[in-house]
Image (cartoon, rainbow, N blue to C red; front, side):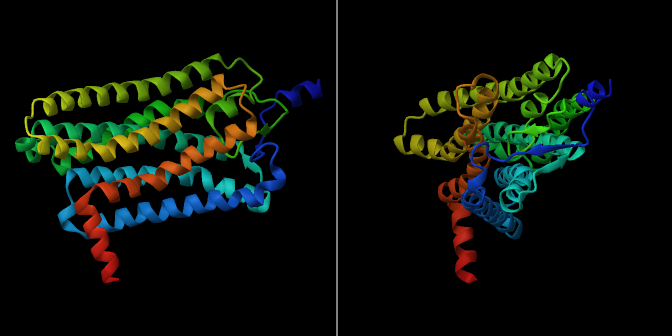
Length: 312
């Protein structure tokens, strides 16, 4: 009886293995991971600093860009410190509370990131389809309200994930073959029926991404229709250039999220170490690329960064 109780008792901690099968290479693996993390932090903090210091950039588009940078910082910071502790010091133990907290922040920030991408698509729609009314439709206060609504939605949808899991009994096997506490990876540790956990997790993913992608698609269909009505080729090019950066950011962001969701559920044929490496890189690469994409494609921001750098 004691053995049965121990098997189904709630453990006080889990063990994150890092990258399964490559434990001996963890120190070497930490080099690209820490490099990506440092570059991403530097790029996003630079973006926040430059926009914060220049009053001329305190506009809706750049406020949304600041929100995007904050979510990029939040996403990578929610997983990378623990991953680097595993790689560098072999500190694999994480408390159940710490694991559920990490899971909440990771998924809540990801949901907020998706909402901001949707808001940026709406910003581009107003800028192209209603340029004369842009300043009255999208004020800084309304952008802040959109960000707040996205944050509340993320918290309300994601909070049940760790709350439901906290009531589940976990097996004696406390080993999570991952670098961080991803929802499905923790669900697999439960000895009880996890249908509710899996169904709700999948529902949240498709509600968040489905609704946001649908609204993004509507925005871009209206943008395309407006652009096709423009007779000037130069105006065509200018309108499309305003959307290029946002489209590139969406491709890098949604590709990573879709990969993580689908491979956890349907990617059994993918070797575990390949899956974990790609999942981590997909969280690390967008925060590195996003400041570069907007820095290159947005002339006003590029000029401000260049002037500040040269002055320093």
